[in-house]
Amino acid sequence: MQPNLQPIVKDLVLIGGGHSHAIVLKMFGMKPLAGVRLTLITAAKETAYSGMLPGHIAGFYSHDECHIDLRPLANFAQARLYIDRVVALDLENNKVLCGNGLAVDFDVLSIDIGSTPARVSVSGAAEYAIAVKPVSQLLEHWYELIEAVGKNPQELVRIAIAGGGAGGVELALSMQSHLHQILRQTQQPIQNLEIHLFQRGQELMPNYHQSVRHQLQQILTERGIKLHLGESVCNIASPNHKGTKEIFEIKCESGFTLDCNKIFWVTQASAPEWLKTSGLATNEQGFILVEDTLQSQTHPQVFAAGDIATMVNYPRPKAGVFAVRQGKPLFENLQGILLGKSLQPYRPQKQYLSLIGTGDGRAIATRGMITLPPHKLLWCYKDWIDRRFMERFRFEEIRE
Image 1 (cartoon, rainbow, N blue to C red):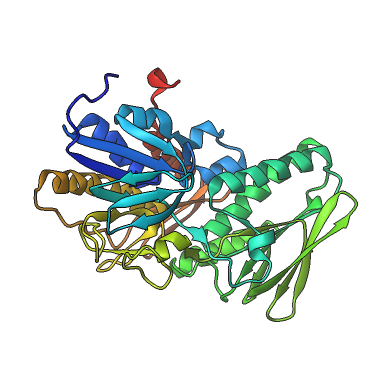
Image 2 (cartoon, rainbow, N blue to C red):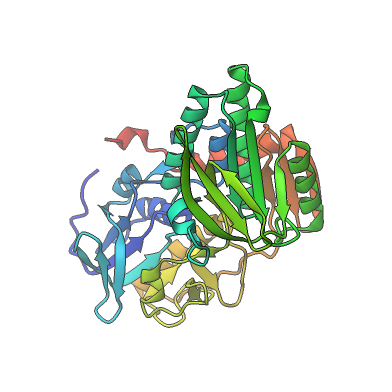
């Protein structure tokens, strides 16, 4: 592809390779703006598609099938690509400060970096629990775990998952499905695996309708996943070594304790510290407060989308469906501000179809008060939607 030879008039910088930014990059590749230099700063060269991640953990998708390679995507958009970690923003001088010392100038900035589970309030969690984000870190530990179970399937493995929202429930079902498959292949009893799911509240998945919560709680119980409802994890002790294994002790506020081999952290989301101290208006969790145009409340040259943003007028759960839907309006408003045009408001829908995989080639469908029980056809529909989304970012012909 020929480089953009137009004189640079304005700099548009994207921080993060989340779902919204992946769509923005694809659309800029299709509709470039003369005189605009596009730059992507991201800590990783690829980004996981959240819709297919549980299926990957369950063993249904390969790594490549559920990851967007940002390098050919940036190339298609004629964007500079910096694989680096952002450490601060200088909003007075419109600069992004990176971990390697690079300072990137911008006229317009957009942030789509997702979120990370909050662990700082629980002693030992930051040191010993495995956060589900960044996904690359989660998968590194997951691959190590399935390799260890494959080598020593006769040994008991006890996994703890902290967080009983949709992410924790899907993770529990997907992990159990894959590890049970390994145990069956090696002719070992599935009782060699224990999965414990901790939830602070008395109900799983509090953001969902009662019918969904009831069905999934029943499925988890039937499959032998041990539920600890109303249990708040307050401490994770440093590991003791028994043979070749590390054993961690989880302690709850009730006094309940559990020894386990791995602890996965899927609790309430939070934002990175550099964003909380950036000067942008944020809520208590540090998420960027944005207007209907996806612009920062306090800095109109800054946009945000996906989990890292909270729409002031339309608060919604942190779900990938909203990040995907924000992609096109974000692109249109970024182009609009660069061209000096008026920006258009984005109003997210109140209800949306949610397809929740149950780890066994089936899925539950729910929208509002309507819930359909697990079925293979619903998984096929979810699979079709997810694969169709990923096809938008296949650039085999320009891969290095």
